Image (cartoon, rainbow, N blue to C red; front, side, top):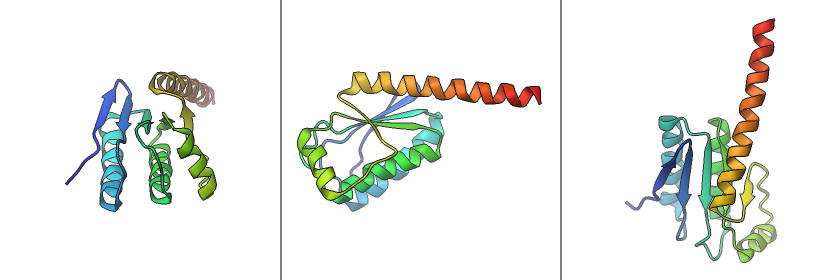
Length: 134
């Protein structure tokens, strides 16, 4: 069966989608992401869709599900490389993606994830400090 590779970059995972995702591949990808997040205790996912020229509602839901799964597993998701036609299609399909951050490319996506993770770590440390003084 086909697989979409998941690469580990420090505490981040890089997933590059280069073709259309069909049902069984989408489900396999979601399972692989959940397992890899747990295995490596990763704090962020970079989802590179720069090679995707068009998107349908199924693929939009897969992207949303990736963000939802990562959020539940204490990780952030940034979608990078979205082409204008893809953004337009998502809007036309009415697919809202409230849990997803976007960046123009992988480099900016890494910066955004690192900023977000650092900010969340500071909040966690502050919360932990308040609990320790109680």
